[in-house]
Length: 155
Image (tube, rainbow, N blue to C red; front, top):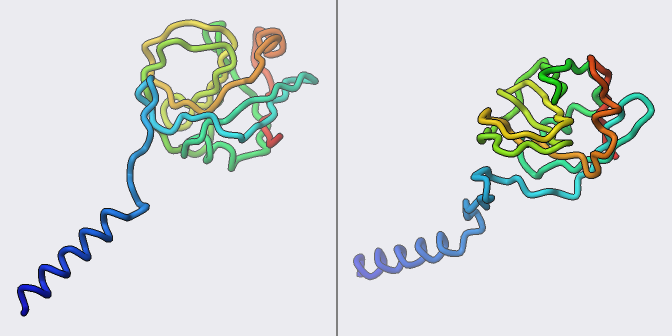
């Protein structure tokens, strides 16, 4: 009788685990990063009087970045293709090799350097993807050649 109860309990446990909704199958994108699905979360990026609408990825890094909004920062020019700002606190990371960087890509370098790219190029550096500017036309002109104040906020 004890053996029959033990066998029955095993079947019950197996059934519960098999039906669990805690399935840890995170989708993997073609670029090897996880949870970089565009979400419906839109944000505004304001440079001077020009406003750009951007889409945030659905990942812990982008969610932590969004929690900082509204955020107005003085971004520093680097390499004639990007603006960056060192955030005071680290954000979660899931870095992958950059590959093709596109105009308007918003990323995290390391755990606290926010980077907004205004030129497309290929790189071997690793970044955590946060989002992208939906229509980056005019982004390079708005950002200009030097340091610039950029405001990130909910749309």
